[in-house]
Image 1: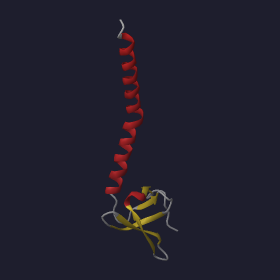
Image 2 (image 1 turned 45 degrees about the vertical axis):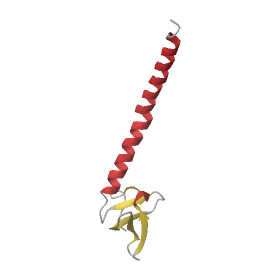
Image 3 (image 1 turned 180 degrees about the horizontal axis):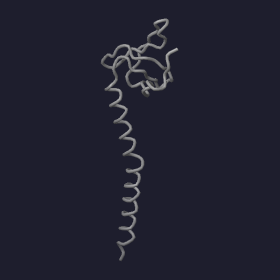
Image 4 (image 1 turned 180 degrees about the vertical axis):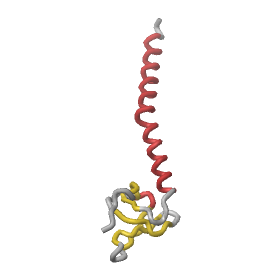
Length: 96
């Protein structure tokens, strides 16, 4: 019976780790995988929003960067790291 409290403590820490994994680590890994898939599937013409809040249209894609046109009437284009793209804005951006 002397080992019973130690076993209970090990089971408690094991249970905490399992809960932590399923509620914190696993969802974060899934979200990171989806973000990587989104970045890998970007193509010319996609409307995107960067992590800085810049809205624009992808003009060209390079190995680690992409060129985003942020003002089509003036031809303003900016180069961003692919990792700076936050989300797809195709359904939210409207042409003026």
